[in-house]
Image (cartoon, rainbow, N blue to C red; front, side, top):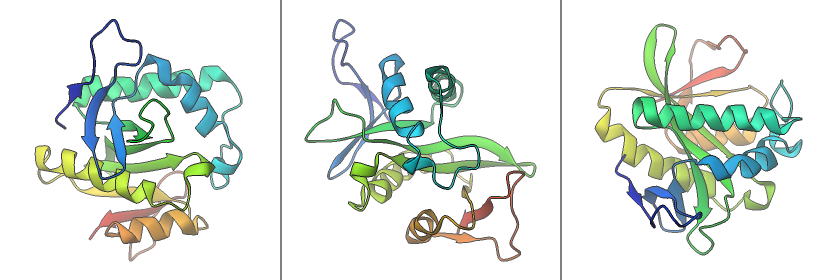
Length: 183
């Protein structure tokens, strides 16, 4: 993903921009995002389909954020903090692609999770498309998958709109999530 830093190091709001879409700015997650990670991943509503439930402690958000940052360092790609262009300082969600191995195959995992106030506005699809447009040309041949619980119909519909289809054999991962793959 091509990146630029929006301001210098002395500015605590400095963010490394990954992609800009019509309404959104996707940036690399940074140290100051732990509160946004916890607000989004600790919200029971955003975890309705998560069998692990919402994060209960800030330390869980810290560990997740550390993983997001490490992915960028290791792979040059990962999940992004998402904000609107109108308010680039407020993280409304996280979306992007994470490189990992699924059934022995190197794949991108497509991820999107947003504050409930951002639901229904098409932000997840817009962010996912922007992240894919940046990552896929730099990692040719790496397939995109999404791991989604069968009862999470909103996420499954979004994956389908993005061109992913459920495994025709009903294959699931170790957490019983249906494997959706880019068609």
